[in-house]
Length: 346
Ligand SMILES: [Zn+2]
Image 1 (cartoon, rainbow, N blue to C red):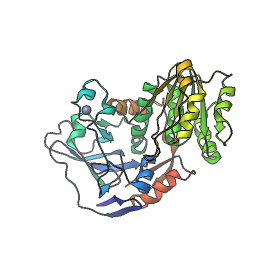
Image 2 (tube, protein in one colour; image 1 turned 30 degrees about the vertical axis):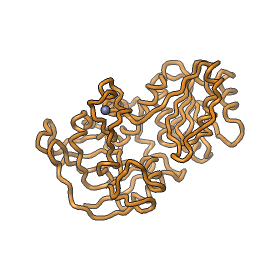
Image 3 (cartoon, rainbow, N blue to C red; image 1 turned 180 degrees about the horizontal axis):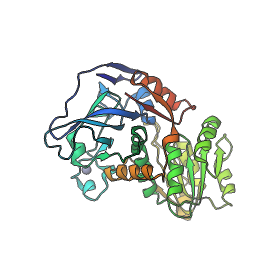
Image 4 (cartoon, rainbow, N blue to C red; image 1 turned 60 degrees about the vertical axis):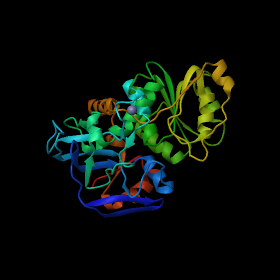
């Protein structure tokens, strides 16, 4: 079979590999869609500390069961499924409290386990052990189902930031994750959603799709002041930073209303992880800062339901569909500014 394997930064090869088997407690999938994540571009540039090469990349996976391994009860050939990306151990201190996104023993599809940029993928037994394989509702395409994984991370982020009814929400970053944040905020009852983005081109593309109440170009002038002005001087109840920028995180603190919450949804580059935080904003305005790290199996199920019910449509966010052979090109396209979501169809 054909696979897309990472060997080293800037060395990702499309090549032949032996077909995997389901193995005890696992499944063998025929991958129908594996969508490209911003992280795939980061891996292309600089690898990842948790990624052991050579490794088949891809973690936004939807496909069809080819074979169920011994003990993988309830699954059979032909089942249409979506698969979690982060595999918590399910038994540690954090997992027992339901905090599976911060399980210290998490393993990941496409990092420690071969991923979905391949014709066939083995779903490890550990995924089934935490209920991480979800049936795709009838009427939902594999391409849409593959976006359940990124949406599940967005759900985790908005739960932690407590996005809700009547709020003003600012989303910084108009990539696919930012677009999902705008749509989920509306689904959760936000009254007003502002979208902030540095690239005028990407902002226009995203705004045409998700129709924020205000599209704000971060053009190097005082973006936080612009946001405060657009919110009657009060600021936003929740500011989600869906961009890997320390400067955007610093700005976000100045966009938050009294008692507001700032979500550092995107991580920062490993070599520049610190920011300057105006602690008096946090102190006097009682602003909260929360993180967000992936999603749980339950978030993935919730995401599939939101997509299937139409509460969070995703089909129109898929701007590019590519064959497996063009995956590396797709990874570049995803960061290029002319795409929202790129999906690979092996
Ligand atoms: Zn755990």
